[in-house]
Every structure is written in structure tokens, then in C-alpha cells.
Length: 150
Image (tube, rainbow, N blue to C red; front, side):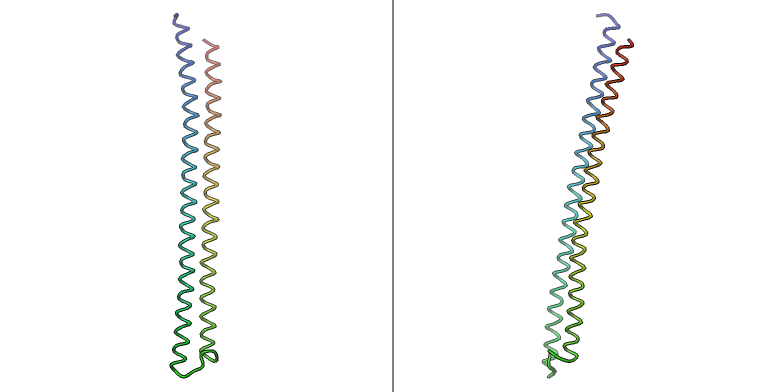
């Protein structure tokens, strides 16, 4: 085999190997971004569960507060369904429901934000893979040009 032919073969093999490496690199980057997307979604679900627990805690506290108001009113000989006892119960209900609703809203926002972040990661992975494929095509084109020049 003459030197020029050997150089062409070696150059072609190196070019193809480089292009294949670029494609594999893009695939690996995409997979990495997909894993980050899964982690973002998991983190969002975890945060949502924590917020839902806060909402449940708010309702439990509301029940305890209402029970205490009724018990104290009854122990003091006051009608627990009217007057200041009823006013306190109304206030407690309003605050408890407000806390529960805030927790529910926060849970929904955590899921929504996690979904958006996951989509950003997935799109970044697609872009990385597309870019590496374009680079690989460029590498092959450059190799073909150089092959013709030798």
C-alpha cells in the first residue's frame, strides 16, 4: 500500500471515528438532561407532598382550635354557637381555610414549576443531540473534502 493511500485510509477512519464520537457525546448529553428532568419532576412532587402535608396540618390545627373554643365556652357557661365564641370560631375557620388554600396553591405551583424545568432540560437534551449530529455531519464533510484533496 502506498503512503498516500495509507494516509487516506487513516484519515477516513479518524474522521468516521470522530463523527461517531460526536454523535455518542450528543446522545450522552441528552440522556443526562433527561435524568435531570426526571429529578426535577421528582423534586416537584416531593415539594407538593410537603405542601399538602402543611395543608393537612392546618386543618388539624383548625379542628383543635375549634374544639378548644367550644370546650372553653362550655366550661365557662357560655353558648359556644353565639357571641364571642362564635366570632372566635369564625376567625379560626377563616385562618385555617386560608392556610389550607395557600398550601394547596403552593403544591400546584411546585408541580407546575417542576414540569416547566423538566421540559427545559428535555429541550436542552434534544438541542445538544441535534448540535452533535450537525457537528458530526460537518466532520464527515470536512473529511470527505480532505480525502479528495490528498
